[in-house]
Every structure is written in structure tokens, then in C-alpha cells.
Amino acid sequence: MKLRFLIIFILIVGAIISYALYPVIQEANKPINKFIREAKSQGGAPLVQFVTNSSQANKAARQISIFNQTSGTKIVGKSFMANNANMEFVQKFQSNVPGYVIFNADDNIAYRGKGIVDTETLKRIVPSIHLH
Figure (cartoon, rainbow, N blue to C red):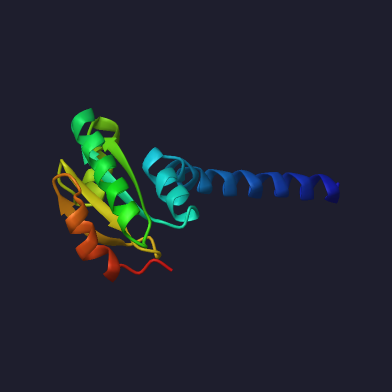
């Protein structure tokens, strides 16, 4: 009888923990959050670029590539369309569209930029960002 109550108690506690963690797991699996984790695991500073079309995304990718070739610091950037799915993050990061956000090693926003990222701005601001 005691064993049955112990098993039921363990199942109830497990269900409560699962229920409590579900929103955290859902948030962590959103594409922008996944990208930030992956960028940090690659040893670079995550840069999230919000764009409205593919030509803006291509321009941002070129600028980040140029910066990475000429700098000792690695930026890992990815463009996200500013659509309904990502507007939550635009608001959360207090960003513009188009605009970009660079994160430091502590997952805090290190810099918010307006427009499409450019190499000269990266050269100016990245050395002051804590990346380790």
C-alpha cells in the first residue's frame, strides 16, 4: 500500500515539474533563441538582424563576412524576417526593423543598431563587447 502511494506521489511530482518547465522549454526552442545558443557555442558574438526582405538579409550577411575576414573577433550573424512570428523578439529586444542586436557573453544585449549592420560600425563597437 505504501509503495502504491509513493509511486503515485512521484508521478504527481513529475507531472507538476513537467508542467512548470514546459513554457521554458518552448521559449528555448524558438528559432532566435536556438540561434543565440548555437552562435555562442561556435565562439562568436551572436548578432540578430531583423529584415523585411531577402536583399537586406544578403547585405547583412556580406557585411558580417567582411568583418569576420578583417577582424580577430568572430561575429555569428543571422537574419530573421520581421513577421508575426518574430515581432515578439523585435519588441522584446526593443529593436527597429530593419535593425540588429548584438549579444555579449552573458546573454545581455550589448548593442542595438538601426538599419542593416555594416562593417564600420562593427569595427567600432565589437572591441568593447564582453565575449568571454
